[in-house]
Structures are given as structure tokens and as C-alpha cells.
Image 1: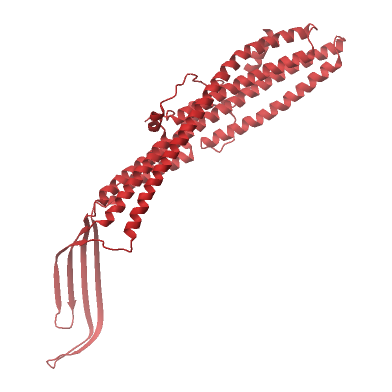
Image 2 (image 1 turned 30 degrees about the horizontal axis):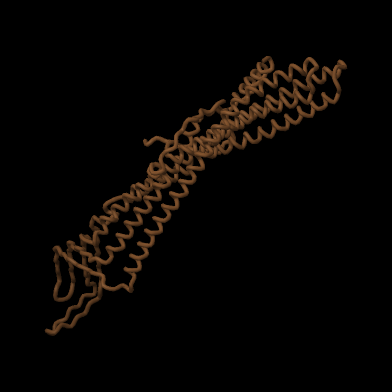
Length: 435
């Protein structure tokens, strides 16, 4: 147990070394991702665009009102010989004409297209919100898994440093035995080789840790080169229960988005059919006309008032395009329904695979947790035997390797549980709240 106590002190030292880095908790990482990730910002703008487009005016319910005006002035050198024998001569005749107007055009019936268009806009806005939440769900999942990866790399560095400490201890003991004549030089040389190998492993894991931190920063929308100090442990849920496949259809966001596409396809099909129906429009306005002329029979003219027209148009033949468009819309509906069923099959298989991996990772985690105690006890026994000269260098080396591998397996098992747990919750749409 003395060896284990020294290892514990080493782990505390390693953690204190990491403390100089920037501390980052899992919740802080998720919050930064949701706030600064570029993909979420882009999806958020798409939602705003869908909201702005979802108006009654865009659906065609409201009239178009326009104001127009024109003013014309001419200066002419006029000479007119009139029928009564008189003449009009004006070298600077000014003629003015003013025509302001207000025009209104309103489609009061278009075969129900405007009502379908408004439903379509509602569905498009709902789809954009689903896609935003799906994007957020995927990025939260990615952040949790990458955070777990950083935790794994940080703990593996500590495990390798533990191996480095054990190799250094064995090397010092072997050197002491060799200098006092109680041991062979080959034992010292083997310990020295192992110690150098562990130093190389430490450098490799440090580089991998830096890469994992970079990937986590990218998810959080940061371009800074930061080595994070993450939590020592990650919370695991080893008692998840699978949901019913029928319920998964309603929970999974990817399936919900595909189902929305089917609804939109049905609306497009209905909109295409409205092209066969008549269209009724009302056109009206208010006009004012004022004309003044320096020559001619009418020197001044003014008129103003309202006007209105009701028009009806009925398509009869457009080269077969109306039937073609209706058929294409119908085929698109069939295509989107098939895509939904395909996605349902993919999600179902992915869910079964993820659950299988989750159960296997939980079993492996429990086994690794049990095995670490045996490896620790075996290490203490072998080191004690080596000190008193009963054990060999090979036996101590094997015990060290077994203990370090047991630690790494435990850390890897915890990481696998967290990854598969996160993937299950992502498929079940349980990583972010409804708010």
C-alpha cells in the first residue's frame, strides 16, 4: 500500500501541474458551444428568415397598393392656322400635364392557394426550428464526446506519468543493487530502457491532448490555442433504458424533420392543383388628371375620380404544363415519403447499434473497475518482492505494465460509456431541454 500511496501523491502532483491551465467544466463547454458555435448561429439566422417570410402578405392574402405620378411640361414655338381663318402664333407656348394616381390590385380568390401557402410558411418555420434544435443537439453531443476525449487524454497523461514514476523507482532500485553488488547490470539497463520509453509515451500523449483541446475549442467557436484543465472525472449513467421504437419516431429530431418535408410535399401537391381553378381579382384606383395648354381649343382640362374592375381568369390550356406540374408535385410527395421511411430504417438500425455498444461498454467498464484492484495488489506484491531480492526485474516490469494498462483500460472504458450514453440520448432527443 506504500507504493499506492506514493502513486496517489504523484497523481495529486500531476493535477496541480495541470491547474496552471485554464479550467473548463462540461457545462461551461456546452454553454460556450451553444453561444458561439458558427453552425448554431447560421441555423439561428435561418429561423429568423423563416419567421420573416411567414406573413399573410407573403402568402397572398393582402392587396398590392401603389402610388404613381407623372408631370410633363413642354415649351413649343407654335403656329396654327385654324379652320375659321384665324391664326395662333406663340413662340413660347407652355403646356403642362399632371397625372397622380393610386392603384390597388387584390386577388380575392385563387383556388385556395393563399391558404395553402400560409400553411406552407407555417411548416417551413417549424422545420427551421426543428433543424436548429437538431443542430444544437448534434453539437451538444459532439461537445460532450470531445470533452470526454479531453478528460481521457488528460487522465492517460497521468497514467503514463504513473508508469514513468514506477519505471524510475525500479531503475533507482536496480542501480542501487548493481552498485552494491546485489544485482546485475542488465536489470538496471532494462529499467533505464523502460524509463526512456515511458518518457517518449508521455510526449506522445501530451501532443494528443493538445489536439483534443484544439478540437474542443473549435466546437466552442474559439480559435485560441488553449490547453484546458478539465474535470478529473465524468459523470456516467450506466442504467439507461431503451425507448419503444414507435415512440422513437416522435422523439428523434432527424425523423421529425423528414416528416415535415413530407407534409410540405403534400402542400406543394395541393398548391399545384389550384392552378386548374379560376382566379378572381379586383383592380381599382383613384386618378387625377390636370392639363393646361397655352394654345389649342382646350386651354385647361381637369378630371379625377375612382375606377374599379373585377376580372376572372380560367386556365384552359397551357401546353400541358399544369398537368405536368401537378404530376411532378405528386411524384415529389412519393419521393419524400420514401426518404422518410428510409431515414426511419437508418435511425432504427443506428439506435439498435448504439444501444448494443452502450451495453457492451457498460459491461467492459464494470470489468475494468474490478480488475484495477487486482492489478494494484499485484503491483504492491511484486515491488515488495523486488526490494528484498526475491522478485525479478521482469516480474516487476510486468506488474507495472499490467497496472498501467489496467488504469488506461478503466479510463478508456469510462470514455466509451460516456460516448455511447451521449449517442443514445442524442437519438432520443434528450440532451437539451425543450426551452
